[in-house]
Image 1 (cartoon, rainbow, N blue to C red):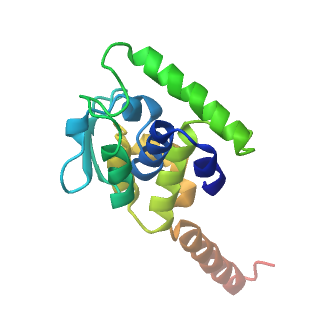
Image 2 (image 1 turned 180 degrees about the vertical axis):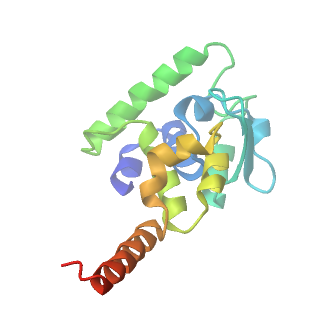
Length: 173
């Protein structure tokens, strides 16, 4: 992440990367985010374009500040005219950043994944991460992120060990 941020020399691209990393927004949702979506408490309120679900997530102060430092307009990154153009523009910019950072498998979704995995590793409930990501179903979140649920493997290991005790009492060798 450090190499990616150091390689992002354009303030807009850097702000977009920070927003995606710390909010879990997709590139399209982040690139088209209206200024009004960031409140005075550093919360981002938006509707996920893909699923039409509400998303409200607090971002760190340095992310909110990076956004507020961008030139004034109705949107942080977009002129409101061509959604496809702004997304393509940032995907191209991100490709250049990833190449400069020597991250050869980098995609814009990397930031969404990082957000999700870090939330789950810190103990956030899968249902809450699902809500933060704007998934229309917890099943979607489970499909991609259940392996990262804190304690999940520990509980599975304990269940396996309990079964060993049951097998041993019956001469299960």
